[in-house]
Amino acid sequence: MTAAGDAGATESDLIEARRAKLAALRDAGSDPFAVTKFKRSHVIADARAAFATLGPHERGGSEVALAGRLQSLRRMGKKLVFADVVDQSGRIQLYLRAEKMGEAFARVELLDRGDVVGVTGVPFVTKSGELTIEVSALAVLSKSLRPLPEKWHGLVDPETRYRRRYVDLMVNRAVLDTMLLRSRMIASIRRLLDERGYIEVETPALLALAGGANARPFVTHSHAFGVPLQLRIATELNLKRCIVGGIEKVYEIGRIFRNEGTDRTRNPEFTMLELYEAYTDFEGMMRLSEDVLLAAAAAAGIEEDHEFDGRAISLRRPFPRIAYLEAMQRFGELQREDVLDETRARAEAKRRAVQMEPGSSHAHVVDKLFEATVEPHLVNPVFVTDFPVLLSPLAKRKRDDPHLVERFELFIANMEIANAFSELNDPDDQRERFLGQARERLAGDPEAPEPDWDYVTALEYGMPPTGGIGMGIDRLVMLLTDEQSIRDVLLFPFQKPQ
Image (cartoon, rainbow, N blue to C red; front, side, top):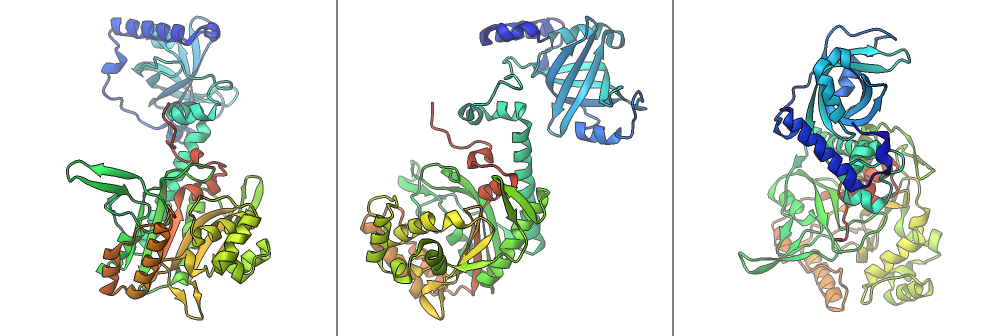
């Protein structure tokens, strides 16, 4: 059993000692790695619920069988040990004494923190009110050959935590809780959409041509077919092909890949919800985006008021709106022509020392200006509407102003959470916008996508009026779990190879 003196031992010493205990278990006919299953009567949370009415010194009327990882071991003399065991659902205390366990108590000496065990015993409540299992039988189901980090001084370096997420999940309960919450949020979104008649589909991640967004794709090569391929940067175009084909409500929650750097809100691969609905527009998508957000919030136990990064966030609907050009004028003192005229936009970006890549297009310049001047002011939920057409190659123009489109982005806590528009379904207009992107690409903009001419062909068959949304799941989880980095809501965030 782990001893207090272990604190001064090296990791190799501790591993050697644990391997010796494994050998002793095997010699005793109890090889942990030969065990194939353990039948549990309860998970720990259910056991706690089943015996929640017990008072101090009271015992349950039946045995339970639980399994989990040993979180701590505390010796009280030679014949008594207290331990904590955890499973995915929670923690419970074990009471192991020689008088009850007989010869099997010798096996307790071979236990270490981190071992996976199965126990059988009767629940009781201690004088201090702690629900505890008095163990009558114990099986070692897996031996931890490496020592776990200490509870208070162990796994704190972020890079180590991300590289060894499996250890992070073991010793930092808050990390596991965040990942479980993430799963519940995604399930709540699926449930909402399924109940409203949306059809979930799967579209290819490996494409001859990645389109649907302004982003640099990852490029690979098919040895079987001898052609270059790209990982998708959006699911948009294939989902709208589904609309053309007659699937009137369609969605996908899937992994997206963009060949870009990392920061607090960006990871090269991330999860996106994209959905499209025929016979509606961006106004319908605005209401739906509120529904999706609030469904995820409810799954996280959040109602109308929330705190993120120490700031109060109100999720009361309807969310307010502000037009894109109005926001640029209010927060950046930029007039309409400072945005829509390329020469003036570039001059403003230079004057404000806005950083961007060489060869950036007019659209990229304007996007960076918005990011620098407006986004820092968007804390509470707000729909930014009526984007310039130059930023929106797949959105339908406003009928009263052809320089703008029927599009919104939902911002909360300075982050873009969702992007939606009335989808462009005019094949001739779409062709012209694709040609504009092609010119931007030839001029040196690395993020301008190559035109997908087959998508134009699809539109020529006729796509009904359609509204669509793209929502970043990772940023949504960040917001609703009050995590400040996207890497803290991804199980395995991108890491540079060591």
